[in-house]
Length: 213
Ligand code: F6R
Image (cartoon, rainbow, N blue to C red; front, top):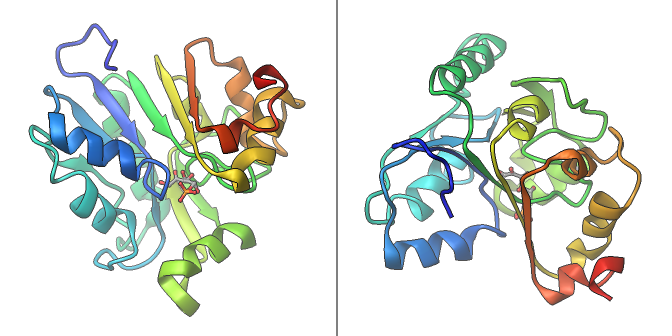
């Protein structure tokens, strides 16, 4: 999986339902040495069972060989400066060799919501209503209104991209992203411009792809 030529490849990691089984599978085989960066975090408390930091504690820590995941700190006074710090740390590490992505129902990647442009870097964003509704499954009425995210700029310049999607509910957005018009309306559509993209979808999520028929 880690095709990078560097000794300690740098990997960007999504959270969520989709990559859960991949992290579970990795916990059975372990990992070589790598540096991991979370691709996003909720603009909520630093310690909360529903944030991405807690997700990595549950899903990543169990993997033999997995080290710390570099995280956005959502509780600093200046979240914009925190995004700059995080982007700086990633750049100092040499950028992403591989990024593992899920896709939001609205076509977001990380928290790059519709309207995000490919040149935009890590930043503080407002979460769209669909994203907050998805978050409400865990956060209830307290779903954060903001997120800290790597931008499409850092994500799309990864040396390899792995997009994961599962389930019927993702079929329409997967087809729209991979076979529809490229543009900010569906941020994931910019993956069509990524030369090193691997897509892993189950049959249900692939159902509306022309390429799969
Ligand atoms: C989370 C992230 C998001 C999710 C997307 C899909 O770190 O980057 O873009 O990948 O919202 O979430 P699930 O997999 O829960 O459907």
